[in-house]
Image (tube, rainbow, N blue to C red; front, side):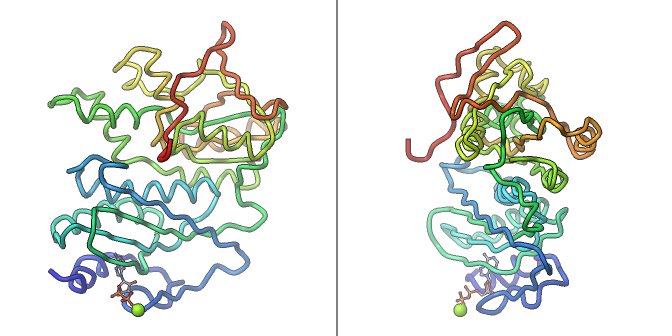
Length: 319
Ligand code: ADP
Ligand code: MG
C-alpha cells in the first residue's frame, strides 16, 4: 500500500464533518472558518515508540493516547476542540496497524466533534504527532500564571494510576483486575475537556498533569510567583492503586508518576461552594492544598506535619 492509498482509503474516510471546515484532506492545506470573536488555541504533542509507549503497544491505544494527550492540553486552556492535523511516521505501510490506530484516534476525538483536516505521512521510526486547534473567548483562556496567595488548590480524577499501569506492563499475564484498570488509565486517559470549559471565568490558573503533580504544579507556582502547601493525605487515589502497592510507592506515583492527564487548578478563596459543586458535574474534583506567598516553595504535609518529597520529581526527556 503506497502513502496515497493509505491516506485516501484509511485516513480520509474517517475524519468526521464540521460545518466550519471549508476544505479538509486532499489539497495542499486545509481551510477553516474560526469561530467569530474567539481566540484560537494551538497545541501539539508527539508520541515516539519506546519513549512514550513500549514497542508492540496496541495501535488502537496509541491512537487514543495521541488524541487524549492533545485534548488534555486544550482542556487545560479552557478551550473547545475544533480541528486536528496528524503527522504519521511509520516504519512500513501496515494497513491493519493504521486502521486500528485511526479507530483509537477517533474514539478519543469523536466525542468532542473534532475533524481531522490534514497531515503528513512519511516513512521512519514509529512516531505520531498530532496538532489540535481549539478556541476560547480571549479573556477566559486558562493560564498557568494567575494563581494568588490564599487560592485553593484542586485536581481532577485520581493521581498515579497511569504511571503504575505503565510500570505493570512488564509484570506477567494474566493481570489481576486492579492492574488491568491501571493499564487502562495509561492506555486510555480521559482528557477533562468539559471541566476545562467549566473552569473558564472561575479558575485563577490551570495546567494539565502530564509530567507528575509536583513538576506541573511547580510550573503554576513559577509562572504565578507563588508557593503552595500540598496535603499529601488529601491526594485522590484510586482503590486499584492503593491495593496494588505500599503507601510510599503509591505517594511517589501520585506525586511524580506522570501521564495522568488530569487538571490541576486554583480557585480564588471567595469562590462559592455552589460553584465548586457545579464543577463536580463533570468529573471528581478534590481540594489538595493552598497557594502561599512563599515564591517557589512547595511544602508537602499531612495531618501530622511536614512530609519529605519523593526522590523523583517528574519525567524529563533531557535529565
Ligand atoms: P503534499 O505533498 O502537498 O504535502 P500530501 O500528499 O502529503 O500533500 O498530502 C495529501 C493530502 O493528504 C493533504 O491534504 C494532507 O493534509 C493529507 N494528509 C497526508 N497525510 C495525512 C495524515 N497522516 N493525516 C491526515 N491527513 C493527511
Ligand atoms: Mg503540497
